[in-house]
Amino acid sequence: MAFNARRYTRDFLAAMVLYVASVFGAAYGAHAIKAEGAALIAISLAPMIPAVIAAAVFFRHFATMDEMFRRLHAESFAASALFVGLATFALGFVEDEIPFRLSMIWVLPALIGGWGLIVCARNYLRLR
Image (spheres, helix red, strand yellow):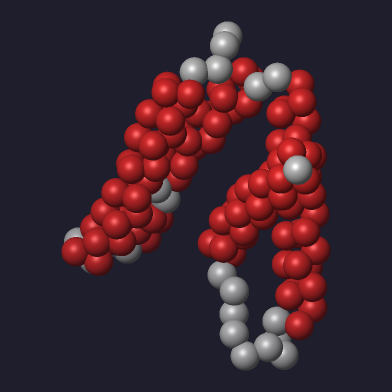
């Protein structure tokens, strides 16, 4: 299966549009209907559906990568996971001493952001 940039962009963008809509929809819906208990949990987890779709789109893209780019992404993801893991571990030791709290909602964006930065840095170093 060859990589199709147009298909990947279309599918990933559609998943992200659904994700943003579901985040706002879940936030509004939970408050509008004053959901409680299981209904509140179900509404709050609604954005996970497009997030899983986006992950599936990425994994389909990952399967079409050549060896070099697959290795680049895998190693960059591992480095990002290690960095974010160590950072959250360190914050766990000092969380009662610092004046702010970090929600777990920021772990995945930090992981993905770190992964992207590492991929960009490694591509820059490889191409210069």
